[in-house]
Length: 245
Length: 269
Image (cartoon, rainbow over all chains, first blue to last red; front, top):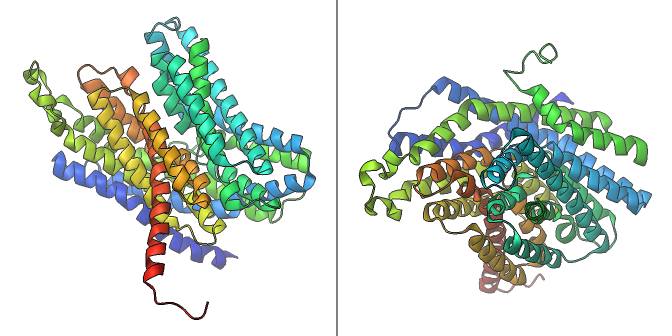
């Protein structure tokens, strides 16, 4: 068992080293040749880079052993169980639950509250800002929950993804016309920050698993696309939130 | 909490665990209460979860001790008025604000966008899955490089937008139009994956560095408000990979067709 785990581990370590190389190269190049500054804390840098390589290696191994299999197994089990309602409830909880506690989103929501207070959309007090940020977080989480539900329905029914994405784009454009100018940048960014490192592999495995367990669906054309919805709906919802508040 | 997490300053295990707790609760809840089926290879799956947690904690800690401080420092140095030549002595003259003065900023935006995307764990995950599902037709490295080029171009254009002060939604809406046109011509099997690659690119590694760049640019360039203009780089980084991935698929399809045409007819088929 141990030997079987260690052999792929060694080659995976090399892969991670290669993955990190571009960042190190960019930082060294700009620091030495553009800014003409020495490298501070060389020891810290080496140590940190070592931790990143090690961490990435463990993550990729864990992905193959844990996250991918559990996502696909659950997709198959839901398909076998045949209860649409439970599957959609699972899809919603996965989207909502993983987003509401996402650290990147918490940070963006706090910044958004500053922008809103600065623009005079809400009171400048601390409480008003906290309430605004909280409202925004739940709005985005709701949007991601709904996105996964729509995405799962799409896989089940075999709707073409392009039509849904085009409708989403039209929604974004229409909301942009009506949304206050201050919220637009935050809204567009909120689409990108919602999908975390653990959510992505799970949701991808869920989509691919569902598409392969249902007859007539192709995992390549139908299985992907859940993440795309999860980064589109928050833009529409956040602009809606900006209009309402 | 301190007693429970004695090594928190070395590896943020408890913080990482806290972040993924909702996901674990949902998975266990539905598995135990709704599906009620035994998980095959439960021990392997649990080991996998432990590795993911440990790996992510190490990964984040490594980034925060080594790369983020230096990267953020560089973003602020490159956008400092002294480096850009837009200091008080240049005030009143427009010469210092020529777009060429920002050439290093755009190059840095491009390079850091490319480099952070290559190291992005969620993109690695999607690339592995896409390779499996397509039975090898989608090349893991090809996809990752296509996405990284998209992010690089996106962030460079996003930096240009902050410098020039043009409205964000013009860029995004034009981007949508290009994506729609490409969707009509791209191979059908790649479309869903391309749309997905927009969302996965911006997470752990890219967001903090790109945010530092946006903040540095928007607070140092006269006439820009960091609260208003600092946002938007992430949006660019999630839009452009959609184009580059579809473009990559179109190119490889075209290349395959060309090389097919030049091959001598094969009698075996």
